[in-house]
Image (tube, rainbow, N blue to C red; front, side, top):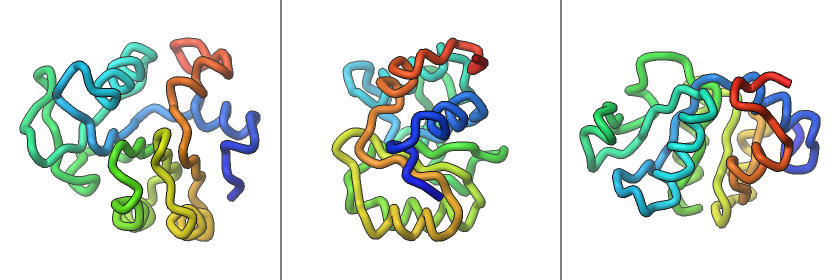
Length: 144
């Protein structure tokens, strides 16, 4: 699969077809970027599952300890953890058949990206999902 960061058409397709997003490293602190981006994605109409084993809930929504604990299929994993954690997260995504890995700004691991792409996953590294969503002009119902 191509790196979506290099193909606006495919990037738009992923963002408009995605419905369920797991946010790995979702903070329960409103001043943190992961919290703010997750709130934006909720407002845009996505179903968001926080992944943070250190808290039990975020704004009344259960927080899950890992991707395996989410009770429904996930379309996209949005990663707010340091780059060194990407290999394990990519491995879980491949095992669970999650179609897209999205690592936020400053988060990147070429070996993990290559592994995910070789397994047929869509990959975005070192990019903000909110910035790309807004740049592509996607509306809040994910339809063009």
